[in-house]
Length: 493
Image (tube, rainbow, N blue to C red; front, side, top):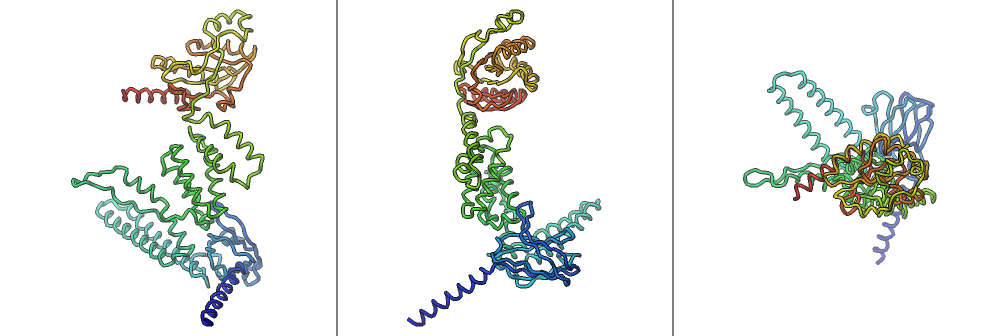
């Protein structure tokens, strides 16, 4: 019983001793040969940016100590010299070590004590630099040669070199497993994609196999949940590559993948904040049609309820923005807009009839849902808008080609009142835009809020059920889009 108790006490003392050591914070002794009485900076990488953490002044012999009571967050750090150059070090669990270097060749002359993972990091960099130099020399020889046979021999050397580098890298990763060095080097490695399956005749049975494998294993070597990788130059690039180039660019799919990425970062508040802000800002600025659905998803599901770092004013604006965007997302049914339709005869009469020009009530009310067409182009425009003056006549010409194919245009003029009508009458008559549905609401503009119309022109394509299938395209894009839909429809038949 006494022995058992002594064993427990010994373990507790060891735990206390270790926690006391790590609780001391960090102490990194530095000596830079060739420098004296100058400032030295310790900072960390944060994706493609550098941030300072500590500053010291070297003594006349080039010695100094970076020291703090709290441990530094793990990651890749740098020591910045007055020469405006720097070299990298890794800060992991052990934050008590020493570095000696000079200003001529950081990698060649660096000496590290009491940090096995930084020693391994330096050796790895030296190995890679040496192999890169060899590969460059061979590549240059290949460029100079004319004989294919000689080129093939040198290419074999390149292949052998590549294999050597790969084997060495994975050897180093396994030997240093559990360290930040191992995690970082592993995170830089692309996954190996196997050959696709084939049948007995050698024919590929799944043409998408390699893509699907690459996508599902993309993060095998990269631990999204390790916050230390955020303080390196690689984290954001990896995430951006995945969402931009690996997954299908379909809003619903992207939403699911964003959910996955965010959930994997919940173990660390800084990582969660970075992931949410990065994804949210990326899709907030996107100009790709339909990607506003991703912005709405991230804002509504995560940012509004969980972005505690944001101020109330911003969050209230975001709530309002999300509320306005939701009804206008792709796949949503457009609201049944009731507008005053002005017939061709009235436009022609108003050319010379002042009373007709000044009558804002001429025409008959028409509902968008009563427009029978395979596809309806919903247009919001104003006759004194610079872009409208160019695009609306273009759209009218395109409409002439699309009308026989079952396409209608619901053209809403946004300038109200008598003066607005005069400008409208003049523009329609000048361009003889009589065939489509010229509509407006002279005194009520709530319809603009329903579809988030803050500028003009805005073109929205609706299907036969008045669901939004495309928006914010120019007239030429509208024509190409609808022609493809019509072609698809004919193939189905």
